Length: 410
Length: 154
Image (cartoon, rainbow over the protein chains, first blue to last red):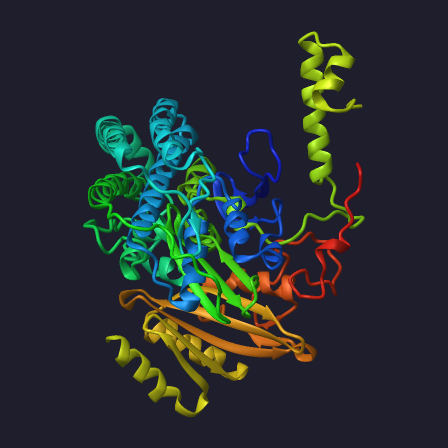
């Protein structure tokens, strides 16, 4: 007799990084069906973008996601530039490539750590995140920020790279990072326990990868040979030498292999970009966006991000569509999780490196009574309240705090 | 098949059914069609030309909802966009899920945000909006104003 039980995972749980809701239907230990529900994290970005100018939208899309915070702006500026087929200065193209690849490096490191964590291999988690730090340092040195780099604008980039700093960037990448990636390659790919744990688990067959049109490492691990950096080169990807990593097994192990080997390619691209970085302007300063449609994409760490922008000749987009890679990778769970055991479900779910904040950016947060429950004002109030309480605990008096903060916070 | 052969094969196969053919650039092709032909077109582009389904974009116009299906032919770096219009008083289109499972989620999204019916979609249930969202409110239509959502103090 079969006993089907539904196990809810989420939508909110103290141990989940982001709100997500999986409904696993299990018979004994086997997963027989899965349903995913998203929509707990909506911010209405597409709608908001219609009320922002093209320059402002680049900032807005940067805030879709903290991990791929330069992937969305690159795709967006590509889309805007596609409307007029703008000629972007060479130096700007190289700087875009550098930012994009540094982001891929830190994102793959982050995934590697999380994957180790989900398997109970916390050493990998600690080490991977430790080596993610130097990459963030380089990003901070280049852009001023660890995340949300604010580098992209239609027509070019906003900040130049100081040529005299390049030796430092190269030193961090080649002396600190490269040996670490080598170490992970050995520690993960040659580890018999990890191989036993991950090989043959959560297989996505090639025909299913095509049917679900999955993207990025999820696709390339199933032998689906796509990478927009090579297929439709943008930025400076056609000016440097690198190769697309392919695996054919489609299991979780193959996805890990792809990500680790891609880090070597990213380092290769970065070194060439730093060496070849041409002199010249970084911005072609467009004054006007013509009416028309533009499609732009970028191979984000998780797969292709695509932005579709329609302009009517004013300074704002009429329509701005965003499609993040997780949106396409998610539905393939029906093929990878069903038939596996519950204990394997978490790592299979994690193997696509799902990013909810990217996938969900469509509607305003709403409540039964048509209210935004926790809006900006409330958040500011909470933050001021916390500062106030901290001040009190540090021994400041009410009047001192009122003077410092401008008013009394109740 | 190279790029011109792909375009020629579409023109040859569908000839009269193409309402407008626009080669915006060497990497972007837009084809306008009647909405009743969309399944046939999409299935040719996806299965015979081995394009990848990328996504679909809906755009709100006063009388119509415009839907653009974007397909990537990755080996050529080409994006083929199939464009159809559905009038708002009869806002229904054949679902493309039988052609590719990849279309499932984006059709659900367009269904709730733009109010387009997809006939034959096997799993049409809320994806992004809450279950108790009012049936006649479509957040991505232009008449839906973000300012109508009051922010309460609590």
